[in-house]
Image 1 (cartoon, one colour):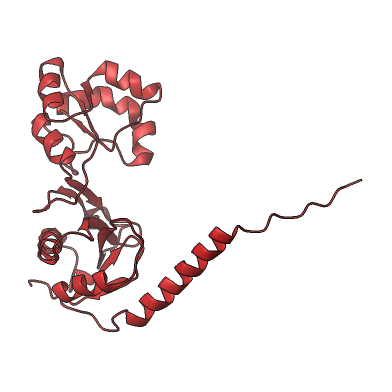
Image 2: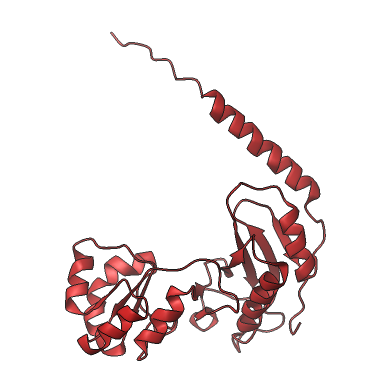
Amino acid sequence: MATATTAKPASKDAAASSRRRAKRVRENEAIKPKEPLPLLEAVQALKKFKGPKFDQSVELCLHLNIDPRQADQNIRGSIALPHGVGKTKRVIAFCPPEQAKEALEAGAVKAGGEELVAEIEKGFMDFDVAVASPEMMRVVSKLGRVLGPRGLMPSPKAGTVTKDVATAVREYAAGKLEFRNDKGGNVHVVVGKMSFPDEKLVENAEHFIHAIEKMKPSSVKGRFIKKVVLSGTMTPGVVVRWSEGD
């Protein structure tokens, strides 16, 4: 005979937390700008939203006039922003023995060749970025099925395959960003923390937008950047008024 079970009621704390979130969403929607704003004003509007207690990341989303199905219209690269993004990254380096010491001194959590590949094959994944010297890609290619789906495979286009491994390690450990468009033709990138001064967020955002403008494919006609949106980890987005060449 089947026995009926009674679902446990949600705790009072969970219910109260849910109500606070719902209230925050309503209040933020009420003050959300209805029209696009200049970048500095967009940053200031973003900081007026009520948010969680932690220091939120500030994300920039560029909606591009590209067709991701066309290989020549895909946008991918890496960039170091003027003021960093407030977060360090764990970097590993695939390199010959003579470069391993320098890579470790530059901040790599691990550096090596075949032995590092073997570690990853056994399950080591405690890193955010993998860089490699060109001659090591023959060895690293064995990890395609492991690193590829996670977006961790070193790539010349992303700047993670380079002869200067130590410099790449140093830049990525300090917060250098990789970016690529998604299937919808959008590029997302973190440009700092909510605690950053307004001017630093503006300068980081401008630096990234200008870099993307320079990557406009020759096959794209008309306006390249269709829309720019700034948002926090847990806030609504604010549309930025941006004209190419600003």
